[in-house]
Image (tube, rainbow, N blue to C red; front, side):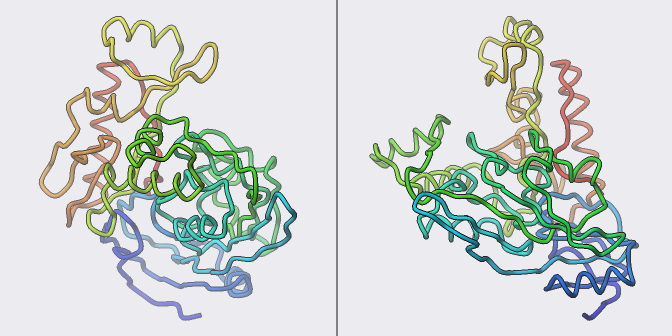
Amino acid sequence: MNIQENISLKEYNTFGIDVNAKRFVSVTSLYQLQQLLKQETAIFLLSGGSNMLLTKDIENLVVHIDMKGVSIDRENHNDVYITANAGENWHEFVLWCVSQGYGGLENLSLIPGNVGTCPIQNIGAYGVEVKDTITKVEAVEIETGKLVSFAAEECEFGYRNSIFKNKAKGKYVLTSVSFQLTKNNHKLNTSYGAIEAELSLKGITNPTIKDISDAVIAIRQSKLPDPKEIGNSGSFFKNPVISKEHFEKLQKKYANIPSYVVSATEVKVPAGWLIEQSGFKGKRFGNYGVHEKQALVLVNYGGASGKEIYELAQQIQHTVKDIFDIPLEIEVNVI
């Protein structure tokens, strides 16, 4: 392991924010990680850098998790059990699963980041959450260097949430994630209108998992900027869940307000719609702003600071709260 000094993290975060790591090291194996933790426990973990907004230089040792590898643990006629190491690129892993005929992750195509971060915020899209397929998460306890295992039910998954964002935050380094996927009788989820429209456009009435993956990729590419071209972290805010009573009051004033029923008493409202109605969609402030096609995405056109983008996020939160009386919660980690 080679610990480097004064390294720019611009290439290590999808926002492309140029902050400095006082010290930086990449680990490629479980052994390397455990050896490192014998000497260093004040660390800053960095994986795919897709769910963070860096607003300052990092003083602690930055540990880049670069452990690769995918293995099939066991399989039967209907299911396959797969473990992927934390440093695997998420989208590439999904595409590999689809190419093998393994179903369950196709709706999660083209989500940026690495496998190791997918359980932390329980990534989800188009009616599917990663918790639906996770069987186990392995991690190293930072304080002791011990390898521990979390069964899916121990991960306390919720909407864009898990134990790793709450009481286990900062205590573990996630090293691998295990999944149960289908080989036959796939449970296809085409319930979202955008997927149905895309399949219809292609004349597909009996879709395969690859058809769904292709549709999701096409939809995301049409709405979301490529981080390699425009710095961003995907969805910046969570879709808020409000009371049915609150929603009905808003509906009287905004007849076209979109919604998704969560329960008999709760309704989810798209954050992107709220932001767009508040006048921020496509708004540019010098070298940063809100994406022109998707109001949920804040972007760095090049050279913006994380502090500037965070201040814009706060401005959006205050405006949405003033207009709709709905608090928007930031989805990305602001550092």
